[in-house]
Image 1 (cartoon, rainbow, N blue to C red):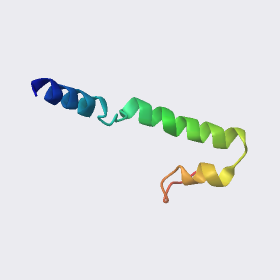
Image 2: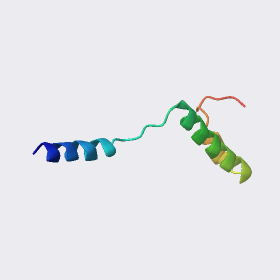
Image 3: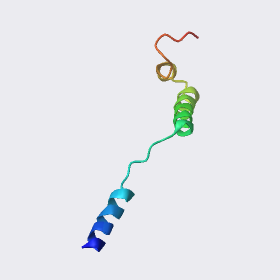
Image 4: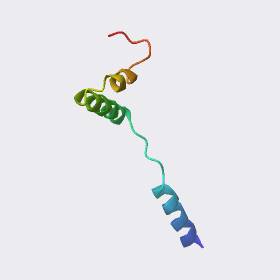
Amino acid sequence: MPGRIALIAFFLSACAPVLAGPREDALTAYQKFFDAFTTDNHDQMARLFAPDALF
């Protein structure tokens, strides 16, 4: 019985969600902007900024 509980605990801990930190969030935003910039997609680039942003 203790072995079964340990096995269940191991599988539950192995399935824990992975959260991105500030660095990963920034890299994701940069990659989205870079992809939109290189494909000349102005609408997609504008959506990455706040609605009241000034250019």
